Image (cartoon, rainbow over all chains, first blue to last red; front, side, top):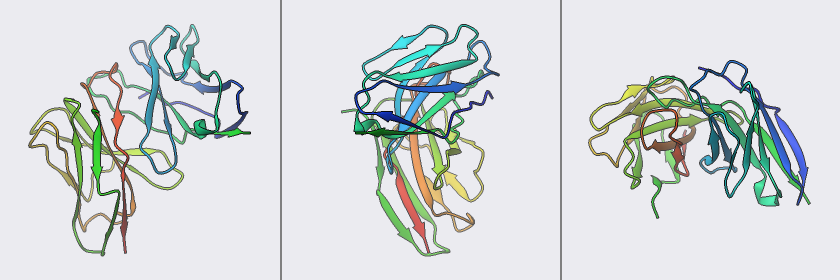
Length: 111
Length: 114
């Protein structure tokens, strides 16, 4: 299964864009990139996912590089409630949806 | 609203006792999963089920058991054989088992065994 590399922590000022990077250099052609976040003592919340093209929804944007070896999650206007651990995950290229959750990036949004 | 319900939120047990954690979903999802999370760490897969009456071991299945008698329910039993049962347990479901199918998580059960 493809693994991902994320920085352990990042800071962002409230109201500014938060850009969270993720490296997935061993990703294969049919594997999706997923982003989840987890606020303390709650279950992970699905944010967005994509295959090749950039994606946008009401929560965030996902930018995937052309070679698909890295991606960036963008929260356009971070709020204090966006403080959480953000997980970048690559879905496996076989017939079972087994996600590997690493340690993620702790995003600290500061006033 | 559709979602996944885990109960109870907090659970306390004495060492040597089996305990069952409940997970119910009304999303009509085929696949369900149990993960364990320890402090400061990511999630590790315990068991998963693709369809009713079928389930498979994940990475850390020893000391755990599951059943899938109904599509909407996937209870997890933590047995006395599990050496370090104190943890945060998360249940999830997905529409199907292929890659383009997000996991939806419950809000977890925090189990403390003393």
